[in-house]
Image (cartoon, rainbow, N blue to C red):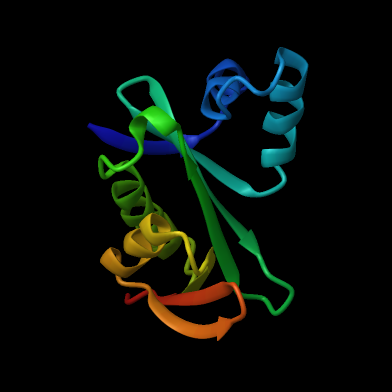
Length: 136
């Protein structure tokens, strides 16, 4: 069963794995602490961290999401479920709109946004801006 929760210090090792072990233990802890600056949730399958999803305030008072899935868990629906769960969390926080930016060539990320109800708003060179209006 897929669930999301805020990250804990004990998740730092799994964060290292999420970034394909390109981080040493110290870098993983630094990453963990930097992620705390945003509302960062781990996407878990049981106790296994399969991805992260963040929500952060934009300069105009709206919110944007970003996400990353561990390579071995990509294309299995985890991020779709993670985004759906994050939308539910945003309802609880009375957030009305979410934005997401994606590279125009990132077919899979665009698919996640399309399948979770985000609508493409703007095409700006290599970056697409999507928006999701949260219904109460």
